[in-house]
Amino acid sequence: MKTIIEPFRIKSVEPIRMTTRQQRLTALQAAGHNVFMLHSQDVIIDLLTDSGTSAMSAEQWGAMMRGDEAYAGSPSYFRFRDRVRDIFGFEQVIPTHQGRAAERILFSTVCRPGHVVPSNTHFDTTRANIEATGARAIDLPCPEGLVPGEPHPFKGNMDEARLAALIDEVGAERIPLCMLTVTNNTGGGQPVSMANIRGVSKICRDHGIPLYVDACRFAENAYLIKLREDGFQNTAVIDIAREMFSYADGCTMSAKKDGLANIGGFLATNDARLAEQERDLLILTEGFPTYGGLAGRDLEAIAVGLDEVLHEDYLAYRLASVRYLGEHLSELGVPIMQPPGGHAVYVDAAAFLPHVPPLELPGQSFVAELFIEGGIRAVEVGTVMFGQRDATSGQEHPAAMELVRLALPRRVYTQSHVDYIVEVVAAVWQRRTSIGGFRFAYQAAALRHFTARFEPLYALGVA
Ligand code: F0G
Image 1 (spheres, rainbow, N blue to C red):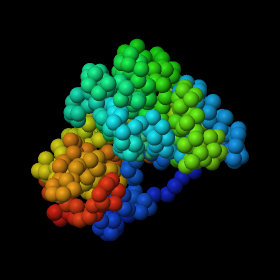
Image 2: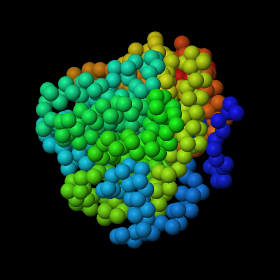
Image 3: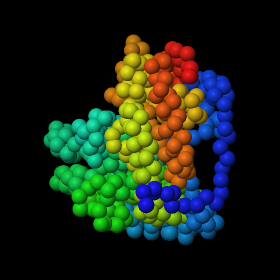
Image 4: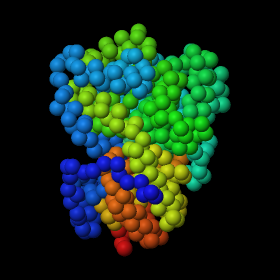
């Protein structure tokens, strides 16, 4: 069969409220043209994030009823811990309310001012949690990862030569750990190869530096290894995942992605002494070590989700729907990050709107037009999110790339929803030469993309 169908039936549905173009224009204006400020009920297809937006299965809802809410020693914790141990192979499993809580506890335990933490590319909360300790977060992506239009199977890889050079330059004693983000979200949702994980691990072990995996999308990364890397075609995806983590000393995880849950995360390691210090911090802000800021029922949902996310029928469908969206956009001529990664398609807004200069925020224009055209909410990953503003002169510096992420929530949308997304992008593509830029009307000093207000520099949404 050619069609990879959704490997599930739908038992419970959530209505989508259909809106008119005029209603969407009004809603967007009321939101200061910032899609983070929209009410989600005004959105037809929500591609803002794949985080915490998964549909849970009947098994997960069933497990939630089994959730034991004991303050200490709940059987739900032990089911969660055993599932994490089985897949990730780490003895010490510390639940947290989401990924960034695991990051905060890890980095505030091991990082000090003067330290340096390399990664293929840090996610923004990871970077912020490292920098909050006075340490420096450094991105070492492979060069292929920085060229959106050039296909390469593993654009998420770390540049091993640059890692070795960094260790020589600053000294291993100033590097408390090295991170690998799988898949590399900031770098376009691109996978990291097993060869790269082995290579990075060897460099780290030769220098006594612990390697941690930011494991948010580990199952998608494992499946992309199966599809793209020689020697893994016949390996079960759970064994690929186990091998990936066998080269690491610990991981941080947001269960809101490949945990198929709406909230949750964990920190894991084999270092019992470190885990003791981390549990002390956990008690301060998250909770007792057998629940860590989650309800017992959340731990149950994650334990089941971590099993379901490794089902190969699910992963085949998951990667097929991302690829389907990417291929149909490419056929229209829409410039995207090639090849599509694990959880999202990234449109290259600088190439989509070449007449809009980076400081007129072409990604923001594309996001606004997608919403007006078809009620689709996407997210700008360009100068709005990562541009730098000089605090004294007010001078703006653009980001390295102007991307717009179309992130697909897990098990939520069907192929006809994806066909609709393609039609909406096609309609915006048709009228791209009449689309202009935006300017900031208000911006906060930090993380400005969440709360900024924008003004269009052209007549918005003119068909
Ligand atoms: N690491 C990566 C690679 C992420 O993508 C995220 C979250 C986190 C860590 C933090 O996890 O949200 O549970 O605290 N990414 C979301 C996104 C927000 O939209 O990509 P969290």
